[in-house]
Image (cartoon, rainbow, N blue to C red; front, side, top):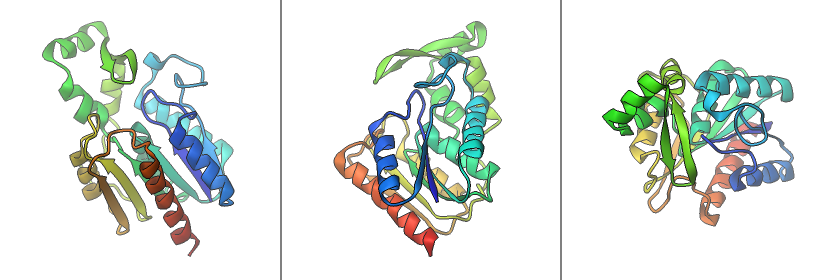
Length: 227
């Protein structure tokens, strides 16, 4: 069994949660795969050229080339969307998912409504707008990203997945409201789904207690899937 880490938007595989999951998986005798999408981290390309289609293809290409056998996908934020899209594309391979503040459909349902009318007009006329970030410099959100994201929307219908799913969501998350996790839980068809709401948790869920919850969820799925 291989645990595949799928990074969030503007994140990379060198983050603390990713490295911790990799170390845990290796110590437990599982495979582990970490990678950066194009325009992220150590991968080539420009971030502003990225789209959901391109990053989905990155994920599937790496999974196909670098893994075999059953997979557990561990996705954070946008990585949760990538995990869900990969599970739909490779149903015979993906046996379980652990999702942290998952953000499916975020371009249309979370990001676009936050923009002012002027920013929306700028995206449509100029092709991009700069979005402030609590984690660093402002970054470009492109018209291509917004428009491409619409074709990968999955929350408005059943998401067919039979394996176990564990969702960890902070209730103080300013980027992905916890109601978004509730909507995802309602859409997923898995009968073995547990949503954990962390009342004082924020978006990254990277405190020691949060990491412990993440590793416990990974361990639980590994044990269930072995049975």
